[in-house]
Image 1 (cartoon, protein in one colour):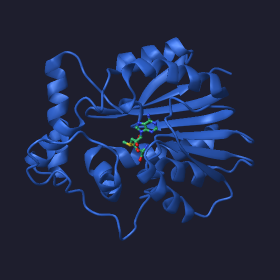
Image 2: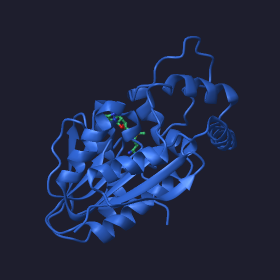
Image 3: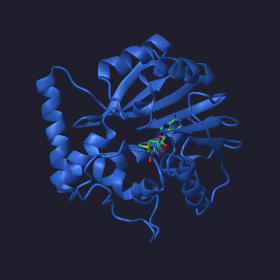
Length: 253
Ligand SMILES: C[S@@+](CC[C@H](N)C(=O)[O-])C[C@H]1O[C@@H](n2cnc3c(N)ncnc32)[C@H](O)[C@@H]1O
């Protein structure tokens, strides 16, 4: 099953880092990124579409009637689309949150094209500042990595508190590995993946410089330990490709 979320003619190929940039600017989710985002994420994150599709499968299992689903750092709504397509329960609202107005504007037009009885509420906000209530499913696909390290624990505690018993959290992230030689290997395999997707060495190195200190990866152990400290007794990776993984965590009933 594939669900390419944005087949618009206006989806452009990502060439943002193709020319020499001199001083490479710090990465931001602005209009230029929005315009190429579906192509950028598909060609940069191995397993991206598999992870998005799985969110739909988890929605079918975990979404409870009269509850909320949260898509935190929703970008153009790929996860919300996948979730909404699989929801059969009544009275469910998906709350899709992002702090990039450019992302949310495009997200709105993407979501409007999908026919569904499930409402989606778009919220322009910092995910650290919002309330999470009555949630049966919370998805953070490649967004926790952009949250300052010292805010991650509180964010996950808030998610745990806002989940209903039996509720599900999905976290997908770029990972850091130890020791450094292993990290280097996984980074090189990711580099090879991007080369195979058509990115030049210049594009790969300029993107890496741009996103350094913006995207802050952690080890799998750090993620699991934090989830357990928050109360998620059941937490495990379900998917990994090179230095990208997706974790599922269940709140006890
Ligand atoms: C890599 S993208 C997420 C991709 C998306 N979840 C998907 O699967 O297609 C990261 C998103 O997180 C958003 N973001 C980063 N920090 C945020 C914050 N503090 N609050 C809300 N959104 C944030 C960015 O604007 C961006 O749209």
